[in-house]
Image (cartoon, rainbow over all chains, first blue to last red; front, side, top):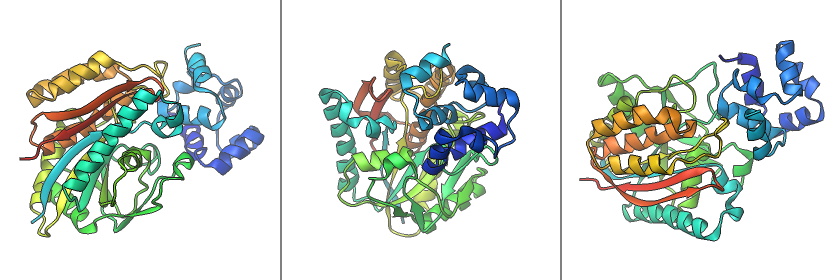
Length: 80
Length: 274
């Protein structure tokens, strides 16, 4: 499935300015999007498998890159 | 009339830029040489306009509008928007509005239905190869974004047919122009999936071999194999466009470098145009 607003936030986080804001205050950025509580929790917990089921794989990878997670850790979480 | 003077393909993984300094020297040399070789062939062919076929990596389009194929008809397009591509020396790049629009019109006449855009951002998919080719003079670039990152995607057969359509459009364009096609992306790789980092060398070698055979066999092989070889492998669609434009005859493999550091089976190809 595609969670439109989750995907939209990941898409928008390609902007370095928004990504910096997100790293500093993720709640403030997430508040701009109508995300459901389960999705917000998955973001807070870096729950990559849950998020992977709701967005495009490239956007997922962009998101974890934007928040500064190393590839090894990203792949480990995806397979967790 | 315009003529097709070259068809090429090259990989474009972002780590070719971001991790370049960490690529083992032997692989770095080979990839650099392969890109430069393609660049030299484009220069030698005196290419006026390069049609660059690549996926849009979420630079222009989002889920509210996902064109299957979008032709750039602008006088000018933008350089890559990715922050890590900011050292690429072109912020704006001339297109060729006349040829771009002629491709759209020819396509519509022939029963193809492309989208079109008067201004596109040419992301790393196009600009990494152009950068690494070290072209002495940048030709005008007509970008074509062909969706290979979000399902459903165009069929492989249709991508091959697009190559023939592009050739028909080029050869019916009244201006004397030397035109080449560059398909970018592939070969096997996986992005944002559990298998990220995996390169399927055997599959890539077999893909390369089958480009030398009958197009229908190549397409059947890819149809069966692509779904389990990583989502990035779907970009071989752009190679099929170049292949179709060149008449479905095999290419010269300039090099194939499976590079774990850039997590891509990097392929470089050049077709003979008859």
